[in-house]
Image 1 (cartoon, rainbow, N blue to C red):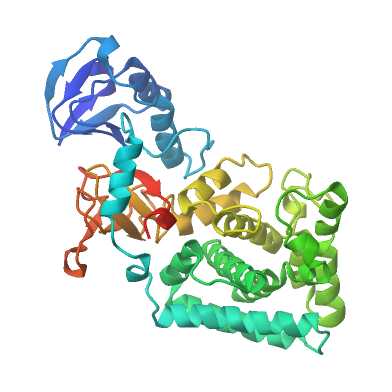
Image 2: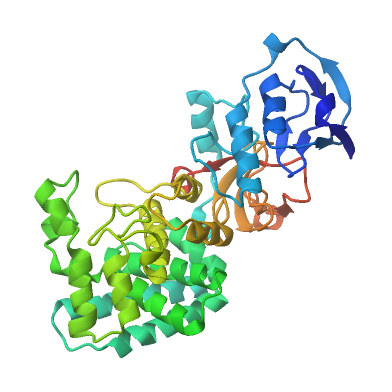
Length: 420
């Protein structure tokens, strides 16, 4: 691979192969002229050289250069250099320049893709165990709502079971969260999903096992106070009135009462119940706590809960894809969330979370199957379609390491519901 000093780059230069920055992100595709703004981005971040398998093939006048987003490049470089903390205001991932489709092309593509997501996330053993966890938590919540005599041991037993299952099936469970695999039991499902994400984050932060156990229990119970609110509020479609919003904001207090007065749970679990809607900047509720005054478990559950809410369909809005949810978290800028927790969460989830459906620069569709922590935008992907959008047979669904295959990269994340 050839190395070209940034100081030698000129606007209008084109290369016969893609050009990559030293942090392994594509700067421009083959035969796409450089712009001055692209070079400025490299200088801003102190990138001293770029690499390419090609050679300079031609220089074109600046006015002929296609509309590549330098903000897009800056975002990619910033995420790598700042440990995946970005401002979230740029466009999609690196390498989308000049890519547009007409409505007719989009319709034709949808019609040509016949694969079913059930072939990707099928009803397997991990799926049954994931669904069983939701059913068990729903049974617990039903008993609590009915006023039955439940103690904390029931919750702790579910936490231990969840952690056991998660050790065996972490990637599958993340796929199920993103895929909305289970319908119904919405409160229980949200609680299990939040507990899974909280456990993985706590493990990434290397917290002691007993703290992780309490965090999982707190995550399972964090919204149980919603059982004390009317369905007219919790299931309302559309906006809430100011009075209704205040009732929603009371659910941490209801949860705390359930934890302490009904379950006789420990203080660590109670703090998660009380504080998971506090904000890093002090603008949360119920006590407007700031920064490290907020319990660490509550800070973890807050991030997990926010991500889970974004990727889950609600009565009042549709879900968003995992990639966009990660971007939203990265754009927080220390307002709602502890930045250290955001870093840990991004490391376990990646920029394109496992199970995400993506389109590559050659037009093929793929599913993210594993991550590279050091290169979050270059995961391992399994091909689902060929470059024409035709579904591949199981035997041809090859796994490609985008960290090794430099000619391929993710052009955009796709909403799987549009292609099921």
